[in-house]
Amino acid sequence: GAVVSQHPSWVICKSGTSVKIECRSLDFQATTMFWYRQFPKQSLMLMATSNEGSKATYEQGVEKDKFLINHASLTLSTLTVTSAHPEDSSFYICSASPASASTDTQYFGPGTRLTVL
Amino acid sequence: GNSVTQMEGPVTLSEEAFLTINCTYTATGYPSLFWYVQYPGEGLQLLLKATKADDKGSNKGFEATYRKETTSFHLEKGSVQVSDSAVYFCALKGNSGNTPLVFGKGTRLSVIA
Image (cartoon, rainbow over all chains, first blue to last red):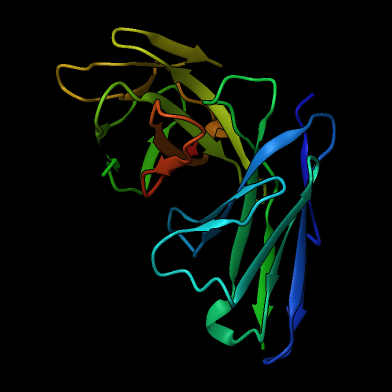
């Protein structure tokens, strides 16, 4: 149980286009989802915390107008990278906390590799 | 704020060698502590966790003890295998509400036969 999926697993796009990444909790309801990005050989950096039905909370230095997050249901959160540029190329990972579990439980998706040409 | 410091890699060991990956943390209150593992091409998986001082988390032969006096959560395994080759992340989570995980930079482990 407790599976989190991401779609797509990888995407290549042209500079200036927008890309949407989906994060789904497949067998549980997630009141909170987190979005991270991971640069090669580096750690995960939290970008934003997404609560179902409310606006996301962004970490300092993360542009909320560039990284649009929507958490419209208890099983789905989306991250849209708007007007993507090569420096946005990275590995984007989501995690989800079950509504019914203790607050220290997070399940991670497999990640989405974004390459902007 | 909360932070995690773990030893830099890469770490290369021969099969059946003893493994230690050091992790220390800075946090207010009593955080929960975690080790996550990321195998090549896969997402993060929870390896083990401890939620209070002196707790020992263990899984798949790995173990780590929550030491509040030294603010440490070192990962150990008595005999590593080639299949343990991965990146290991130490992380903490504050105990107030649904706060996010704070990760260390990760330590890449390579085990050779």
